[in-house]
Image 1 (cartoon, rainbow, N blue to C red):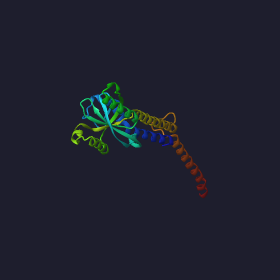
Image 2 (cartoon, rainbow, N blue to C red):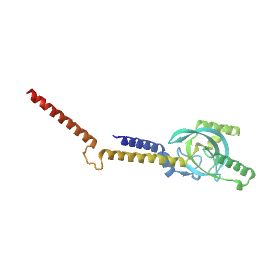
Image 3 (cartoon, one colour):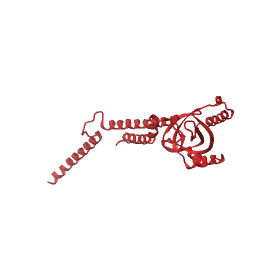
Image 4 (cartoon, helix red, strand yellow):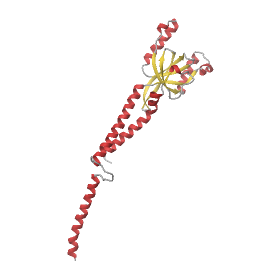
Length: 243
């Protein structure tokens, strides 16, 4: 294996591994993305990607806390980011669900304040909405503790809010990042294939026949034959002289 082929194989393997790490998100985003209007707080599923407007059929009730999370790149948690947890009341069937926002948190804080103003003034014209896409992840212990503390401060019985709150949190999903990851992994796969093909051409030449040996091997065998011939020719006079 020459250097080009080795580098190409490395790029190909790396690209395939990276593609495998994001394949689930790519498939779900492309073929199984759901609309929040079609979901209730009871029927979200692990890994499901849901998209909808916050402020139309579902309303921000409160910002219940902040936490530090690791943003995933190619499925690996690498970058630390601050995120906010918001409690959302669902209009379709009632109940609550948490959303975790890491990007554009100011926009959601502004939406929350306008929602509170619209409710307090009974003025629907003040109501605004914003698009949100999130991936359903099972609520962690840290998130559950934040949620419990919030309802305890509101003097809401635990039995009530647990029965009406989803077991999943919608973690903000970055479509742009997934597309970039897909482009990078496919580019590495393509580059790896091209390097492997280039390496094979440089080894075998333009035309390759079944059973043909690479020119390098043929040259090595030819050199060995020449050396053997030279040695045998050099030994013959010595044997004749001894006779």
